[in-house]
Each structure stands twice: as C-alpha cells, then as structure tokens.
Length: 122
Image (tube, rainbow, N blue to C red; front, side, top):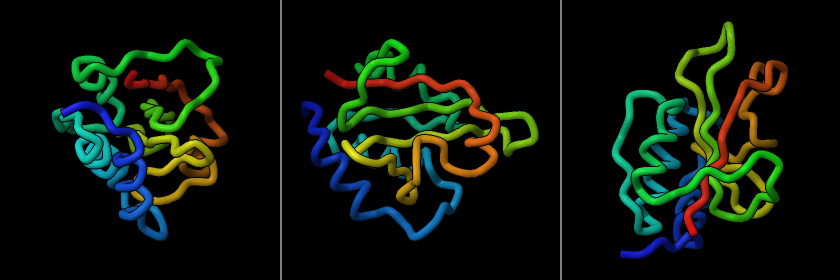
C-alpha cells in the first residue's frame, strides 16, 4: 500500500482528543499506518526518527516550508518528561493525540524549544 497522507490526516483529525493524554507517538504512528505506511512502535516518541527513515520518510532540511503530512519528532527538554514528542502537520495545525496550538505541544516545550527534526514521505 502506498502513502496516502490525506487518510493519515483524516485519521488524526477524527481521533484527536480534547487535550493531551500523553499518547502523541501512538496516535501519530496509527495515523501514519492508516495512511498506508507501517512504522514499528518504539518506547519513546523521541526515538521515532530512525523508524520513520526506515519506513521511507526523509528528513526535511531545517527551515523548509511545511506541507501537510509532515511529521515532527521533538527531543525532550531538561526538566521535562524525557520521552519527547511526535506530531503531524495537517496543513494548518499540528495534531498528535490532541490538536496543538503549535508544533511544540506545551508550555515547557515552547519555553525550552528543544531540538526537533521534520520528516516527510514523498
């Protein structure tokens, strides 16, 4: 099955919860799977980059324009939970297990702005 980013985005939109339930990676991974690409589960969101690359995604150069279906893997920040974060861009907003106000999911991430990489399936 080939990648259908619209199906992945629809999955995320229809499954997003009202607020975070600390299941960002699970929801994003299941959306990617709904779009036709299998990505193995990892223990932590911060570790999904390698699995996305193995599944056929590529790393987008920093500063590139975002497009729908882009996936961000964000590293943890000092004092945070240590698992990192994973989310998908729908063309206007970032969605994981909830609809986010920006790529960084919460105030600690927004304040600390830890490193991240964007992945894209072409």
